[in-house]
Image: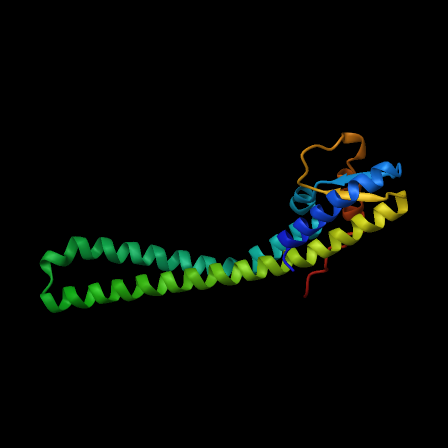
Length: 176
């Protein structure tokens, strides 16, 4: 189930249970999941890992884009002076490089999206577990995730959950 579907399901369930919990004088909490997903060290580390992983291919792609721009500039400058066969050969080279860049860019974008989603799903589960653990320890009967129309700041547990995520996060040791 996707993160968005999880969030919708949780929100629907929370809203359905809200009258029951409120009438029973239950303890409520609110958590801003977007803020947790933006600020949790687990998520930030995943983003940094992906940046390092994709940096080499991104650099190579930018170098190819620079080479393509130089080839186009040289072609525009030299085309009137070239024979038809040479001009056609250069144009084919430019077109082939342009297609290659587009293909690589699309592949890179697709792979990055897939890997980002996987990293986020992994972090989402860990964050969700910490929210549940915190709620149980504090005796909360219901924790409503964002987005909500309004939540009183006194029931907002986001900062405390974020602090716990920071305390429990252990950065992976770099491989030699």
